[in-house]
Length: 240
Image 1 (spheres, rainbow, N blue to C red):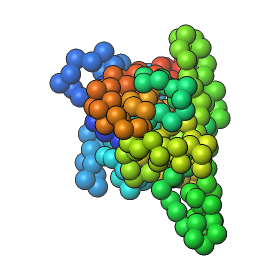
Image 2 (image 1 turned 60 degrees about the vertical axis):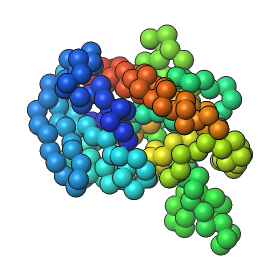
Image 3 (image 1 turned 90 degrees about the vertical axis):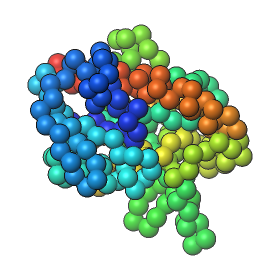
Image 4 (image 1 turned 30 degrees about the horizontal axis):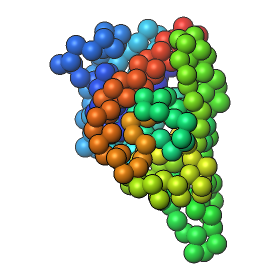
């Protein structure tokens, strides 16, 4: 099986890609190729019996759409695992907590003037749901490791939310538990191409007025938390 591992920023897949950093996650992979395509770098590797292709997209929905499409269409990935960080909307979430998306939506998609709900375009849907099998696999991994894995709705938009008012609007409108900038775009691509996917986020901030300070402070540790969990999922997929 060929599996895509994707993040938005270098930090989000730093453990998998940075050969200059003696990160313990690197030792698990055998690197086979580096491919430059469409202004981005894709790394091919193997892990046990799995073929992997890894990339970070750069921030935002357009970049995420391009990278996800490339991973599936050019490299032939049969599954996509997204790892990264997000802002917590659910007040029960703390910085560092892990959240598996049960559904993803676009909070900045608005043609409501034509009578459509926020987040909807004709012939589309407000929410796109990841693979239930991968969510179950992630929950099994969390239980085996004694970790808490939240499950919730993740809202995506081309905005870094650092406003209590905007955060509350997104929470109320979409019943969102976390906010980020790529997940729903990846979800739309995978759903359209009928490829199972999973989106995991570690909380790096709480999407309020201090969000940019928290994000800078906790980005690397939260990203490492998420990528380490994805490695554990790969181990289960390889052994299963």
